[in-house]
Length: 73
Image (tube, one colour):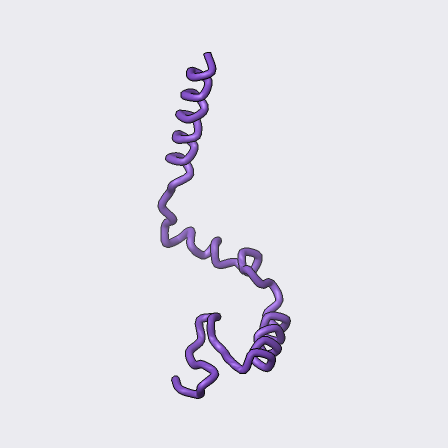
């Protein structure tokens, strides 16, 4: 009985994973690029946090920008 329930749960989970995988069409990608989908909603606050981190750590980078604390790019 327990094994049958476990097997049913496993199959249900597998079906849910398969259904969740979908291709995003080019015309739908604009919906994913909305400001509400951004990790940081306030660009000014994000810039301030980056500047503070750069000032404290004497290094930059890690946010997609080039360069390092040594001054070489």
